[in-house]
View: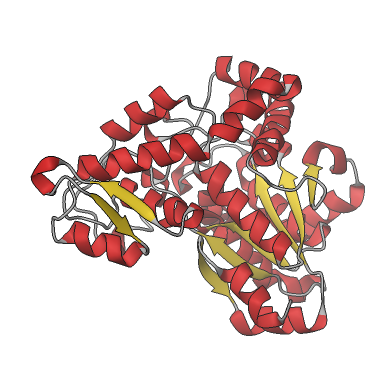
Length: 363
């Protein structure tokens, strides 16, 4: 595979930001198998964003010859008091995340899953954390709390301020060339780039992917593009707010019910969660999308071979929101069928799901 094709795979959607293109090209020219990582707080059930969107990018990277490391950040989840701060439950949730990506087709033999609680007994790691902490002001540590799904004013414990130094330490400790995380994690990655020369490391390349929008109406509507960063944590799909999320093992009736209730304003494509699913999932899974139009809109089966073609018609009012919802619902039912079957047949996976479903999911 030539470098152009590898660049295409690595940077294709759901990627929204790359820092920097020139550095990525140079990396691929000098290293046939660079290391990319993503880190996750094991904190509950897996929705489309954590599941499908992240699985797509893992598979892209593997196809491009990148060594992928997935950090199951159990200690970060514990600091963040996820699942009530129950470490044993968090560890089980880590197993659950791993099962979820395997169910979505992530090749287990091509991806290295790393459990934080298994590597953090190394004193060198904590020495690195302290070196980073010595370079970060309290103000900067508070400003980066977005990476933990928190606002600056929510830093009440010393452990909250350790979150960012630990995440940056993960990057250096795991010998990462590419940080491939969601847009909400960019502050930690940018900090790693800033500190790398001071600490004797190479600057990691930052590859940030889109955060799938939740199904509910944004807190302010209409939401302007300039407000996106401000409300990012409030509009993304969230496991702690089940009404905003489609979980990857939801049954067909649950999927149809949630999609039917989803926010989908007529003619509006910006910050429209159904349109978001169309762009980042539907046209990722299918080259052609068929929308059954209701009688008042022509009653025919309309074929779309591109996202742009579809949103052009939607903006014109040629597709009713419900027709689009029905299309999305049935597509998700089909796409997620292998996941439901995996969790039904795999006893270990089923056990993790049963326990996670009974647990109290905390923000």
